[in-house]
Length: 509
View 1 (tube, rainbow, N blue to C red):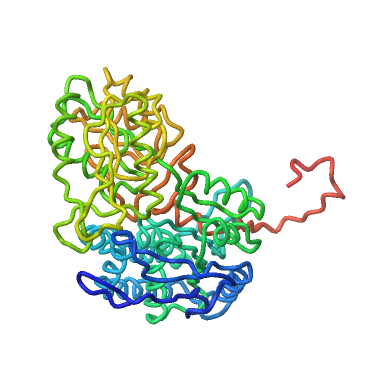
View 2 (cartoon, rainbow, N blue to C red; view 1 turned 90 degrees about the vertical axis):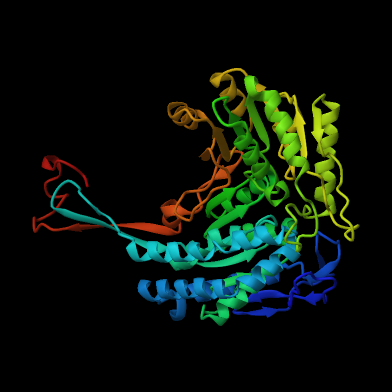
C-alpha cells in the first residue's frame, strides 16, 4: 500500500491471510471493512477466517517448527537471522509508521517514535538467545543433574488495535529468538502493518510457516485460534473479559498463557513534587495514543495541599492539546479507533456527570475541519472523583482521566489499590524512601517513579489480578517459551537390586 504524506484518498485493497510465506484467500462470507479512524473511510477489506483457515495456518506453523529450515537451525544462525530481521524492519520504518498512522489514527510523530524502538526488541532477544545457559544442579549422591530446554512450539498471539506493531513485536521477537513459531490474529481494526511486517520478514529470509497471520473477528477467528488443540502457548493483549474467554479455551489444551488485560493506572502525586512537572506527566500519561493504552494514567490521586493547583493547571494544559489530522506534524492527539469506542468514551463522560463528578474540560466529541466523519474526542478531565464512581473503577480506554484528593500516604495507597486491576501504577515524589515504600505496597506489575509509559525489551511487563498473568519482555518471557527437561545421570558404578536387599536400602529413589 503506497501511503502519501497526507493521504486524501487511497485505493481499497483486498487482503487474505498470510500463511506459508504468502497471502492466501480465506473466509467464506462477506469481507470486513478496515477503516481510517480519522476519516471513517474504508481503506482495506479482510476475510473473517473460518475453522478451516485456522487449521491451515496451524498446520503450516507445525510443519515449520518440525522442519529442518527452521526447527533444525542452530542457535547462532537463528540469532543472525533475527538480527537481519531487525535491520529489515529498520529499513522499512518510513512505510511502516505511515501505514500504522493511516490504520489506527495515532499522530505521525507518535508512530514514528514508537516504531523506531521496535528493532531493539529483536536485537535484545537475539542476544539473550546467544547468552542463554542451561543449569547444572547439585543433587545428593553420585549424580550429574542438568536441564535441557526445548522451544515450546506454536504460539497463538491475539493482538489489539492500540499498538499494533509494538505489542506484536514484544511477542514476535522472543518467539523467533527461541525457535518457536507463531499464528497471529491481529485486531480486525488494525491488521495492515502486521501483514506488511510478515511480507518484509519473508523477503528478508524468514522461512515460510514461522510467522502466519489469520484475519477476522475476535469472537470468531480469535476464539477458534485460542481454543485450537495444537497451540502450545497463548499470548493475548486485550480486555479482561476477552482474556477470561480465551484463557478458559486455551486451558483446555493446557497451553501456557501470557495475558496483558485491562488496567486502571493510579498516579499518586505527593506535595513535594513539582506541580508543573506532574501536570506534564499527567497529560502525557493520560492522552498519548488518545488514551487507548492499558497503562493510561486514568486515575490521578493528588495530595490535598496541591489538589486545586494541580486541577487548574491540568485543565489549562489539556486545553492546549491539538486534536487533528494524524498526518499533520502539528497534531498532538488523533482519533479513537472507531465510532463505537468514541461513543463509549462519551458515555463515561455521562456517567461522571450523573455521579456528581466535576467536568473540568472535554467530555464531548471533537470537531476537526475536513474530518467530519472521524472518531475524535476532546481530551477529558473530571475532578472531585470518589472511589465508588464508575469513572474511578472502570477502564474507559480513551482520552479520559480523573482526579481525586488524598490526605496522606496511607490514604493514597488505599485509593490506588481500590481497583480490580493491577497492571501499572505511578508515583510522583522527591522523597526516596517514600518512593520505594509506596512502590512496594501498591498493587501493580509495573511501577514508574517520576515517569510514565517507559518500557524496555529487558524489563518484564505484565500485571496482577484482573490485569492478567505472565510477563512479556525480559528473561521472564524468554524462559516461558521453553519446556524444561531434567536429565539425571548416575556417575557411580555401584550395583543395584532393590528386590534383593529391600529392607536395608535407605531410599527408594
